[in-house]
Image (cartoon, rainbow, N blue to C red; front, side, top):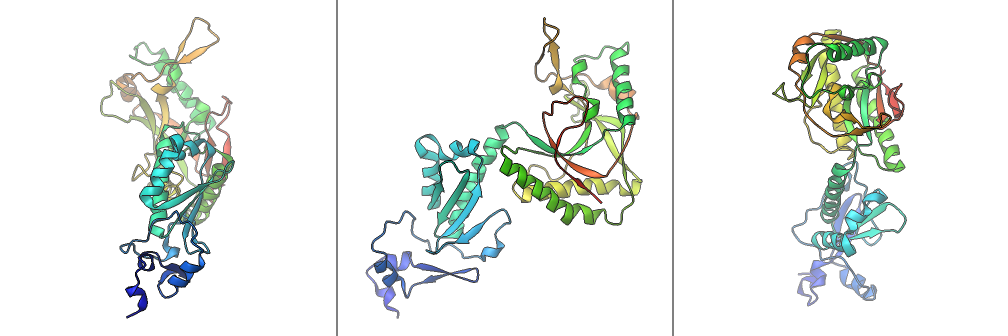
Length: 366
């Protein structure tokens, strides 16, 4: 039997040298003792390797993981974290960072002034565990952060804008008073759109990454899907609500269909594929199996009230309205149609009221 198994040194077994061979990680028991002596008793911050850890091919790690093995045989993942979220990972007096390091048996390195993190450990399982815990903290922080961008399909044509204005005027001028409805709750006709996915992009690095991912998705997913498809139009026809009670509604939206009708399922498939692509790349948190395609027409979150000074307005938050009459009166209302030509990576809070949202990037589907 090899002498290493008769050793009185526990580290001979628990902390052998790790060698990376063509993406596979091999523990070297034979040369450990010499390597250990040559290390000149350097301090190690990493916990011992556990025997139940499984070795995996490094090439099988998800695309958004940059996993490598450094010269000392340790696994390392480097990734970007926006500076505004660094404090959440560090925690008060470094408590959160220290807890993650202890529980995952890793070292988390942060360089002052640089929004990057390195997680170092003795096994890929440990570093991925730490990365996942950091990701969870980041998603929790993003959930509380206001949405900054969204992937959209604009539905802004002269016909849609004209018909929407008629829709709004008819409702507001009708003799029937609608409980809870305020003129400020109607969508800006220059910003009517389909939302595919909301995004939180808080710095230029994340914006550049989102642009890259959308272009990749366009080449790999969207363009092949529409390669042999004729020109399509998105028709905005009829109205619907999100909930079951028409007397207490937050959002009223326009229903969508495709012309020619035989391609009705293609728009939904494209939206789902884009959403999945962005979730797989770590830019969107997976929350739904399918995208709910809709064009918001009235939203209670838009509500404003006039203050004593007529030149100022104040948002007051959500208050539901009764959509019963609108649903009956405009059940089959035709708002118009728009060409399905491109996907828009839109920037929220664009100040211009007379045009669509500014674009971080647009891609043509053909």
